[in-house]
Length: 152
Image (cartoon, rainbow, N blue to C red; front, side, top):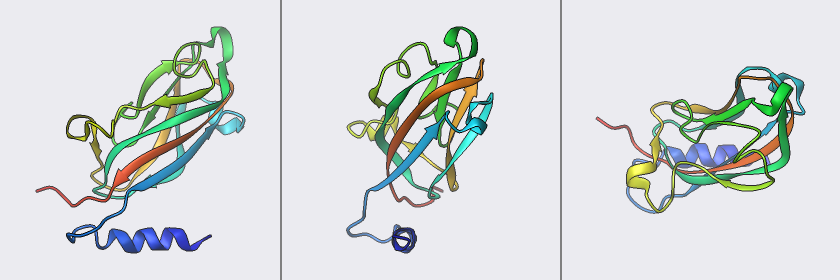
């Protein structure tokens, strides 16, 4: 299904035109089973939100529990535009990473005027590991966005 990205890129050319638009969904995965993702660092997911888009909601699903070296004090933060703007850094020993299931993110579809995030340039969804290296865990995220136009 390689034609999907082309359709969305073509649709973004029309984001400045009034009329019907689309709601984009950026699906990403962060998997500590991939050794490179275990280190204390920012880890890009390879999924990018288009320039001038407005993130209006979404969620992530913890598929397998996260653990880290030592006392599970390792933290994970998820960001698009700025540090922790999707999910603030939280220890894997507590919420939201210590239980399997769907978890809320900061932008809320019912309050986009106060919680949405407008990306200034194309931004990669990034998961940042801190405090302790990870051992296990996997999540799948879904970020909802609408194409926008540049602000003056």
